[in-house]
Amino acid sequence: MNSSLTINSLKLSDAEFERIVQTNPEWNFEQTAAGDLVVVPPTGGTSGSRNSNLCYQLEAWNLASNAGKTFDSNTMFVLPNGAKRMPDASWVRQNRWDALTPQQQDGYPPLCPDFLVELRSPTDSLEQLQAKMQEYIENGARLGWLIDPQDRQVEIYRQAQPVEVLQAPSTLSGEDVLPKFVLNLERIFA
Image (tube, rainbow, N blue to C red):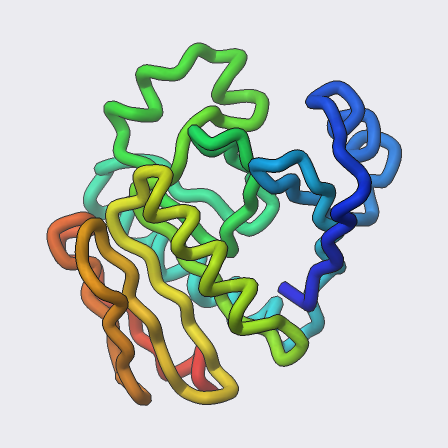
């Protein structure tokens, strides 16, 4: 995603947030736990292509494992802290997804994904993405990757562990969260 704009002085109710989302379909919005509106501009071509490859690899693994549901960067989740966030790619275990009502599945799912990825675009603030990754972990994500193609670096976020930083890895393992999933970074770092 491209650099986002947070409007701190504009606190919105759920209904007001939904009205803004519905009347501005050309934009993506998130909302912080404090109610601040975050305007997220569309991605550029390079970031969009990288994200497409990432989602493709995750979905291919999920189709083979049949372990849950995958989501792209247009899916908004309502985290336990109330924030409304859209990771670039994410996955939820099937039993957690099945526990939601059909209305919750059709709307903004009220949960934090088990696994997620944020893919840094050239204009993204690294500090803002790192804070977002910490928020996901604090809200129940079991594994998260912050992939920075510009610096060829990956930050790995896990529950109750320090952030692990890898320089120019060729692959990433889904560990016990996504058993046997291996993300090939060749096209994402290209």
